[in-house]
Amino acid sequence: MSSEFSFEILTPEHQFFSGMVDALTFNAKDGEWTILRDHAPMVATIMPGQLKFRVNGEWKSAVNSEGYMEVSHSGVVLFCQTCEWPEEVDVNRARRQEEIATEHLRQAKSISEFKINQIMLARAMARLRNSRLR
Image (cartoon, rainbow, N blue to C red; front, side, top):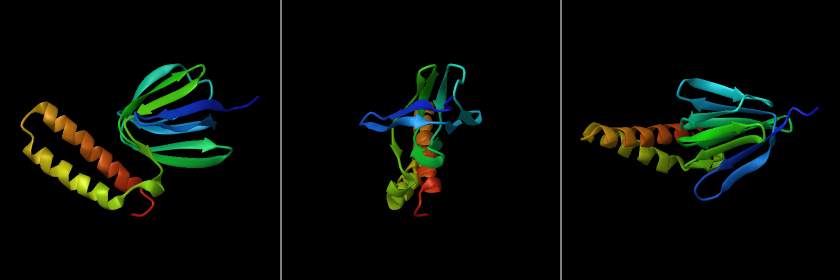
């Protein structure tokens, strides 16, 4: 019996990944989670960070932004604003975004402004932390 399950990553622009995997690890608000075949159905909020998934015995990783994931008996679908392979991260752009988000956090005038900039900063930091060109 196979230990694989269907996994798909969708962004607003395109389907980032679709295939069979046998493990998936992601960052949620309450820590790092791993999904294996026959996991109970659930919906989870995804935090910016690194996704790790095993395809044919080989671990792959991708840098993701905020989003959510649905685990069902037919597989896992992850919806996020952006997703990219570590080697695709533009480190200079991510550093600029980190600086801008940090400055905007200091100047936030409302709770919603603060939260938006917090997400921007988390995304930039995840991209820098998980880029291959650090």
